[in-house]
Image (cartoon, rainbow, N blue to C red; front, top):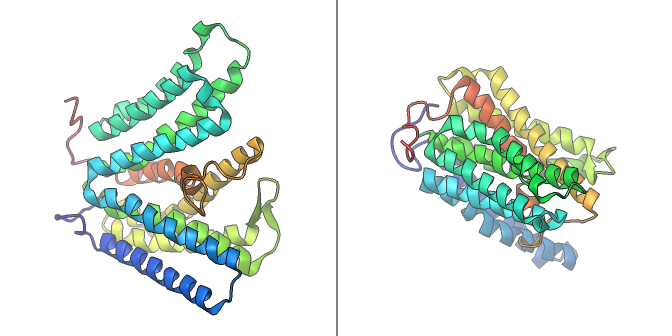
Length: 326
């Protein structure tokens, strides 16, 4: 991936995304203030808006800060996010009661992120099947065949999503020019959610999957694809200029992939919550629910975009490999 020499803001796309994010946060705060002062919204709705805005004021520095700081901070942040998501999932599904399986999932998450930090791609990709195999056999010596399929499947799904899946976002940091792409993905999935909500409210129409997510509409889903694809393709052209991925066809494909995978991740989590009969996976983020409720889109976007870019451009092809294990 092409990268300019210099610090965190060396690439103009990085600067543009940070400035645009701050501008959106400021404008939205002023808009909510105007709604509050003018009395045009009900008190409950205003309170919900302020909670969401305040949460974003905390979330954005936590999301964007590590990316700007550097490679190790980015991978560390992804590791913490992965463990936080698994914690909510384990508590919601009851998997936390299976201490051995939970320990293997946590070790798997730590191992795959260590492989990312070490820039050891062979170990990184091998950990997915190896950990799945270990999860499949680790409880057999306990001689408890009852419930084996359910608990093992829950654990393998957990590692697939929060270990192998999310770790791809951290592995991107091994490329010297990772910042604009990672920042684009973080902001694009958030915009994808906003676009789906806004288009759905403005246009309305048939529900997308009423039993899975009653508030989502087909118009909202298509609107999100259009908005996100356009944004990612335009910004991606500046990021991947001079590479095979700069072809407009592939840039549009990448944008559509971000939107579709983001919505699929959201619907995946909705399916889990509907099956469990709960509304949110947690309450740590006022106005958003849990950490997993906020970052579910990245679960599928990170590996999907990683392998698309890896095929055309590669990550860290000029950077030192196995920086820890040698």
